[in-house]
Image (cartoon, rainbow, N blue to C red; front, side, top):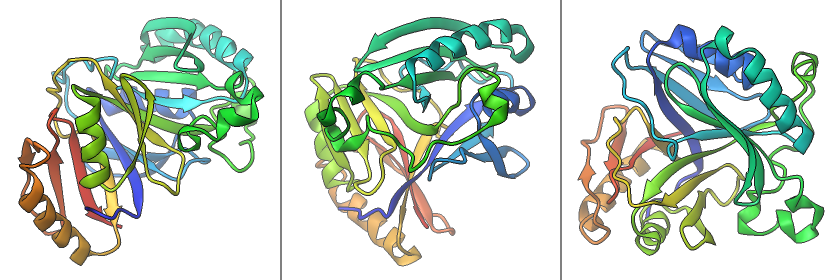
Length: 279
């Protein structure tokens, strides 16, 4: 079993960074950490993990809605305010496929797509948290993901304040097999939320990956992946050897070569891509 120290990064791709980045900074509260020739690394000021956005060019395919990412607000009325704000500014930011707020999986949320074709969710668990047990179940993923609310005059004028970058989502075909892979290969916690929904997370943090059983096959590029970090370069090499020796047991579809970083990619049975790297 890999022993990660963090679920450190989420990755997505965009058709044109210059059009996607304003959505991320102006509407979802991310801040730029670094950039290279073909990617930008972002971070929400109240969240521990990073989001890496890769420039994939104008022919990058439309992303399915089950491969979305999400931020969280504290109050339900903020979701309604975000709905109004996004609709008013949709043309300005190139937003499309806006879906009005509704309840699902315990949250009240809306969805929209940014110009790079990525689906984003603005969610709230205020109703769930009215019960003391609402925030303690499932590894605490529905509880507040922040020590203190993030204050932003700019976003307060929007009517909503994204408090944290909370989750990504991917598809799976078999919840039981996915649970085994998450726990026995990646060393993550796997919480069964519903018969077709698993929350995968590192035990020491609250951000998570929703594994949604929906019978769809993943055909996305490695630009859409999640990165786990381990304690040292030696542990990356050990992890690669472990996956190579046990991959057939967990029906791992592909194992990438060990890079000079060192790091490597692996594709699970559903062709979802994961990266293992040194912290």
